[in-house]
Length: 118
Image (cartoon, rainbow, N blue to C red; front, side, top):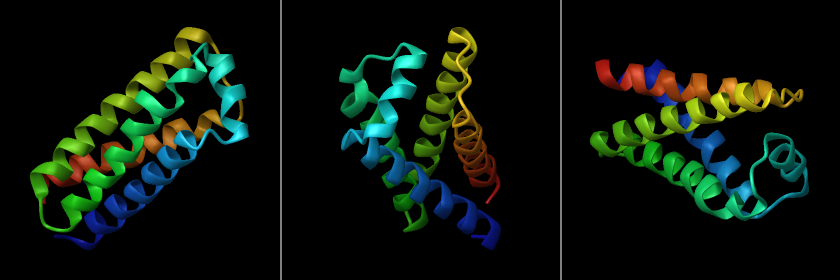
């Protein structure tokens, strides 16, 4: 396992797990983003928060020696963040926080691409 892979996957895991937990806790700053993108508040816990948190946990398991779970988590997170980017384009909703969508997508794509070759 390369150092670059470990660092990228660890950062992606922490970011996605943290974001998922905050979403499931329904922190106040998330709901204006949901409203602007037309996402129902009832989706905060499931599917959005749950998928992000499980993706982060899957990346951790991949680092701890179960590579196929880490790879599956990377694929799931890439799909999740692709849908998030699509939602921003579809709704034409681009708040300043949108940059984080691309950061999360890039970390997930990096985890996937490095996981395929490590």
